[in-house]
Length: 125
Image (cartoon, rainbow, N blue to C red; front, side, top):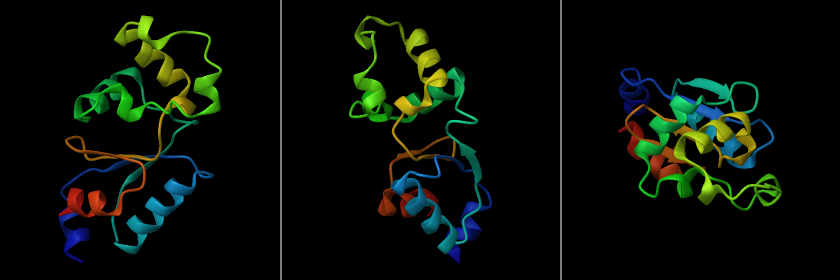
């Protein structure tokens, strides 16, 4: 119960996609631990370019940490992301959220990309 009580002071945002296995695992873990969060459907309500910039600021490896380079959509891109400005890249990711790794969980200060149970425990403790 300490996890849920601690969480009440933090606003968690959970970017998810229902058919994503990692997203379902993360959602189940959050539910099992009584964690409240704001759920955002990654494709219906994607992060804005401004939100993505804040997310990138929380990463240790920058864009590489959130970009799904193994996705079919990424492989089909007809642009070289290395030639894009940060602003152009953020705008593209906001318009093409399938290029993002998922799930994305943040409290505004810390970030978890993918299903990582130990990181989720640390985020909430």
